[in-house]
Amino acid sequence: MLDKYDVIVVGGGHAGCEAANAAAKMGSKVLLVTMNMNTIAQMSCNPAMGGVAKGQIIREIDALGGGSGIVSDKSAIQFRMLNRSKGPAMWSPRTQNDRMKFAEEWRLLLERNPNVDFWQDMCTGIIAEEGKVLGVKTSIGMNIYAESVVLTNGTFLNGLIHLGEKQMGGGRAGEKAATGITEDLIQLGFEAGRMKTGTPPRVDGRSLDYSKMEEQPGDENPSKFSFSRETEPLKTQRACFITYTNLDTHDLLREGFDRSPMFNGAIKSVGPRYCPSIEDKINRFADRDRHQIFVEPEGWETIEIYVNGFSTSLPEEVQFSAMKSIPGFENVKMFRPGYAIEYDYFPPTQLKQTLETKLIENLYFAGQINGTTGYEEAACQGLMAGINAHLKVHGEEPFILSRSDAYIGVLIDDLITKGTKEPYRMFTSRAEYRILLRQDNADLRLSPMAHALGLLDDDRLRDVEYKLEFTEKFKKLLRNEGVTPDALNPILESKESSPITQQVKLSSIVTRPGIGLSDLIPLNEKLQNFVAELDPELKEIIVEQTEIQLKYDGYISREQEQANKMNRLEDVRIPDSVDYSKMLSLSSEATEKLTKLKPATIGMASRISGVSPSDVSVLLIHLGR
Image 1 (cartoon, rainbow, N blue to C red):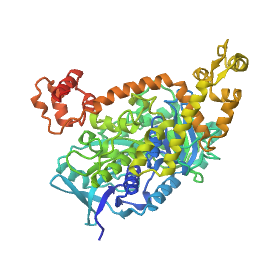
Image 2 (cartoon, rainbow, N blue to C red; image 1 turned 120 degrees about the vertical axis):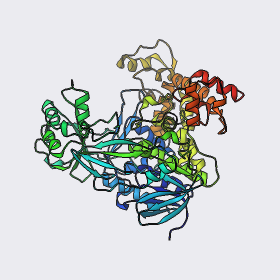
Image 3 (cartoon, rainbow, N blue to C red; image 1 turned 90 degrees about the vertical axis):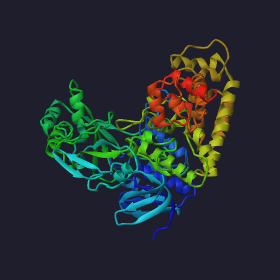
Image 4 (cartoon, one colour; image 1 turned 180 degrees about the vertical axis):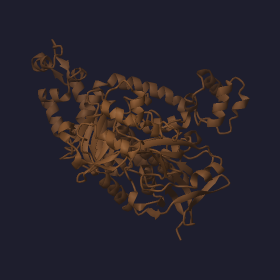
């Protein structure tokens, strides 16, 4: 009944949407198989995108032609640039989103692509023969065939929901778990594990007293995620609020600890370390007398509120009584309680750099199936899996991002070389080239690659080329133009910066802390004319880019030099046929790890835990280097 496809994507979450969108944009015939067409791109947990390191990933996805940035902009109700008080390597964009609008925008984006077909059904297994995937099986007994399959199952694989002493099979509240795939994959030789995540209660915003909370507005001059001209910054925003738990809250929660699946042994898997449940926070940080609660609206019109910071699997009556002790929540009405969920995942060391599995050709894994947590981490894996599935099917070279190319490259490299025993979340500290991988330059880094792949149109590339050209021209102008003490010293004194005694180049002043181009442009007519003639849509971006590049020039150059050195090791490929057991000078641990993980390059081998610098030297000698 259904045609044979180039790519079947199983699962309609963040990873699945990006995978289907990317492969279809590149020209593949794609089928998106989802259990429920009405929950495509559902924000299963918090109604927000981005944040520290995650915002950088969304900008990278957008720079590569993915949909998450555009959809986030179109459904945003608030925008904030986090960490503005720190250096630009730490600036991280974040949106609060309208949950319903977010899902609608993603569905419309996919429906507009004629290469995407949809099928509502549960995928119950994989069809594979002689080490190659052929398609999928569904719950109504259909076999659907394809050249490649991308699995993006989220928390649905044998999902088990915990609420106090109650346990229910499910992949999300009110939705059944997916069965069959794990069993098929184990039979094919894959290793599987279990992980856990959780979500907080949702409450009625009309029942809250916001006067007892701290208002958290969006940025005064909001930006946006997407580099495209398709979206605009918000003109109006909805506020979020902050309140705090107290000792009464903690005592009320502790009363239910004996009924908590976290503590009574019902949950045996590991949850996300950096997003702990409220009971875990109280237990681990017993000396803290309060914890932050972020009160986040779920959309423009809805009264539903997401209680961020109160993730829990305690019995619903314990959750309710404890919430009522929080300032502003005295009369709270609960829509639904929080819960924990356990699900199957597959250790990602079983994957290649392309996210294709090592065991079964043309089978790709993306998202929580790989042990990650977070919409952004899932979305970028879906994008890369979709791109590489298309390329493989059409006999083209794979697309791989290095650790110095993108946070996406860091995430995938971490997963396939180190694996993960707990839900993996991206942090800026995981990237050794943070100054190179800023959110502001994601398009300059990645969009030319995306254009070559057919993921971005000529207009987007023209904007990138314009930014590159005029940033260089602006830097050159600032290096040539001087400023006198009479003109500059009043500004320097107002900023408590040392005065100058003779004329200096403007570029040397930009490097001073607290001095920006906005202070210097009014002092020079050539600068004013230059800025006035810039494309109005790109003017602010070029000024910001120029300032960042001049201020951090030394750091950027040093980091680029380090990246170039490391990338020389990435260029040394290790043939699949290498027999590590014959390299007698390798340590036994290195032999074991290298044989199991089969790294594609010397660079990857060097990052595997247990492989020492002397082991790397042995490998280089063996490869004739």
